[in-house]
Amino acid sequence: MPYQDGTFGCPVEVGLQMISGKWKPRIIFELLQQTRRFGELQRLISGISRHVLTTQLRELEECNIVKRTAFLTIPPKVEYSLTDFGKSLEPILEQIIKVGEHYISLQKNEVSEN
Image (cartoon, rainbow, N blue to C red; front, side):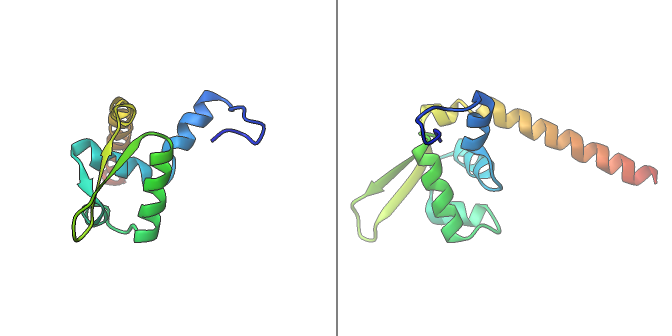
C-alpha cells in the first residue's frame, strides 16, 4: 500500500484501496456474519473464481483485515475470520449497505413512475 518511497498517500485513498474492488466488501460482509472456510465463501459469493477469492483473501490478510487459520488435519482445513481491525469496518459496511438500499429504492421509484 505504501508508495515506492515508503510514504503513504491520502488516508482516504489508503482506506479505499484496502477494501476496494468488486469482491472485498462482500468477503468482509460474509466474514462479519461468522468465520468461514474457503469453499463456504466461494459458495456464498456467486460469480467469484477460486483464483480471485484466493487473491482477495491474501490482500485482505496483508492489510490485517482477515486472519487465516490453518489446521493440521487430513484433509487440510483452513478458516478465515476478521481481525479486530477487520471487525472495526462493520459500521462502514453498514453505511454502504444503507446507501445501496437507498439508491435501489430511488431507482425502483423512478422506473415505476415512468
